[in-house]
Length: 163
Image 1: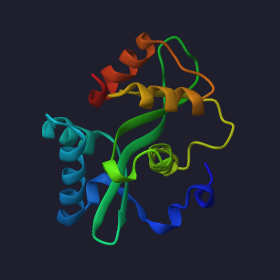
Image 2: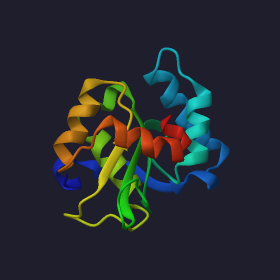
Image 3: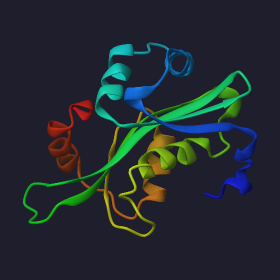
């Protein structure tokens, strides 16, 4: 996605390390999380903060817009001889008034590219949980390959946020 096409410049968008966010940033994330989920599980979100390195946070003035968590790692996978690039797509929440503007993919993309391991056109295994069919559709449309659930569980055993 191209930022200009979707007018993302009207938002303040920052990519942050999850181990270094401020109390105010955490409060904004929790506000968005509570709006997005009727039974928001804060322990799941806390586990994501401990497991994934990057958080993309978008605001407009003092208004929370959305956030996404993710990371790309180079790791060994079962039955493969060489380390592989694996995208760990974490939770993403967009405030209702800002949905359907392409923010989900844009914010998640910033988080997963922050490590510098993922380059355009690179082949990578993408793993993530989907809370809504639109999320699954978005992920499969932007990724060239989608692996089996077995692969996800094998990664998940090593990266506890996905179990």
